[in-house]
Length: 104
Figure 1 (cartoon, rainbow, N blue to C red):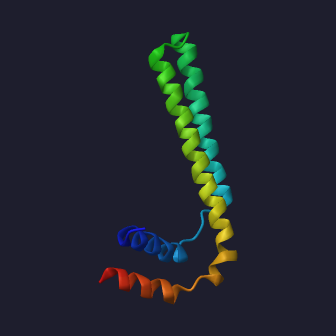
Figure 2 (figure 1 turned 135 degrees about the horizontal axis):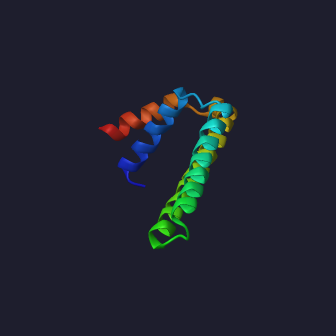
């Protein structure tokens, strides 16, 4: 691994130390609102304009991509929930020392 990538990873680890996870209820409400918006929008579009065309199928593909992104975000939230169990075992002084070594 080159020094730039290592430094970037270590800096993100230090930033994660102070980051608080989003509450589960808020994440659930955001996901629910997005999915309901997508379903309602799709329903209205099909009801108004009828059978889907190529453009509409592309739009549906974008919705699927949105769902995949939401899944990845949820996966990151699960990782943050596990963070408190791992955090005490991380030596932040050694990370800061390594970052200063890489910075020079």
